[in-house]
Length: 94
Image (cartoon, rainbow, N blue to C red; front, side, top):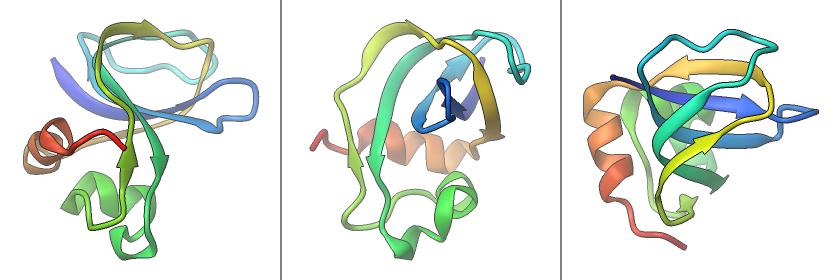
């Protein structure tokens, strides 16, 4: 499974980190495993691209993980490095 951050929903404002067996397709729903919603990322993360590439920084807020979630529709998706994914999985829920 590959690690992704997916922006989904009507306006793409729901930002979810998780794993998927298939590559996301814009406009299509997707099932994510071990998913956490990203509630807030500080400037130090360097935006979503920085979060995906370099991992979380102090001030990041995530929800607790759920086993699976299905999104309404993918608007944007980004791959997450293995190191960043490990850090995001360990990051405490806010």
